[in-house]
Image (cartoon, rainbow, N blue to C red; front, side, top):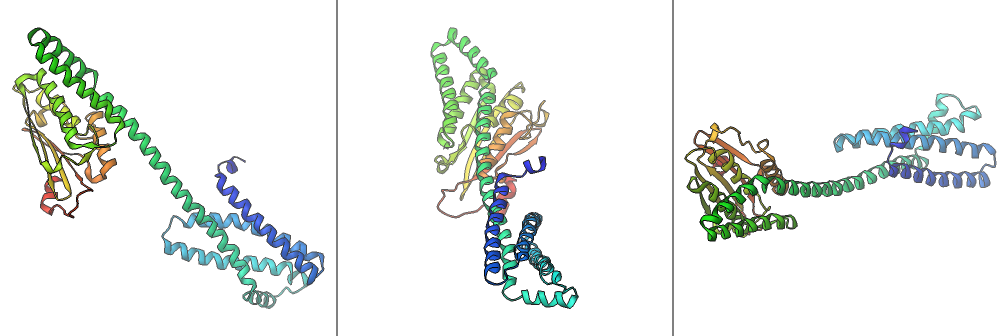
Length: 372
């Protein structure tokens, strides 16, 4: 019973409907033959036995089709051709057994003559039974595939939402807030105007982070504006030790990107590259276009390979891991984070395709090699 409970309901329903259809078919055929051709009782019994055999075969055909479905189409076609012949031979032999054999025609020539007789019109009856069962199997598998795709899309949407929430917790974290509040507290005594400006920038950062969860994509210009507010807040803390440069292609400002996609890259540069370095350093953001491809790069001249923690795009923290996952989720696996490091700093880059770009253009092999 436990094995039956594991069978999906749709397969049980399909089996029941097929068996019901053939029950009606066999019953009508047997009654017609009994009434108009041969009014013997064994006609009804023969129909019942053949029907029972067919119900068993339907299960076997489902299992055979399921096993073949793991192979290529050519193998499946050959497998079903073999199955069709085997089904005809066995069901035809059963039909022979319940008719001619029981009447004393027991020799091979009798069986051969009976089977050759079935190859006319009666053969279609057996072929239809096999083909219809196989057809039902593939129809169910097709709709199950569609249902699975929709389920995977729904699960991906839920995971993306959970990832966004995790992103908010990790990127706008208590340490950043506490450090900013300490900076504001210090500025209140020395420069109230600068303190008010910092509070405004902090509120803008949090407002963008919260609004990001209601927008799947944002314009790059908004993303860069948010990033600049974030960097200005950090510059208050690090003073002249943190410098920020940007080189943005104006034609890229209207493209749509996932919100807060650049901030983890800059945060890691500050945290592991520039922050621990006594003299500080510079973080450079580059965004440029080559046809429909948009290239992003965050570069710093911090500690590089001498940092205590290495940024590898997957294990350096929730923020970087989420960024890598979100890029691949939105733009495909080719848009993953790429990290290059040496003693002079880190370079973290990725590229995406602008689907709204009207002119078909591809990067040259040399450019793609550079990005890789």
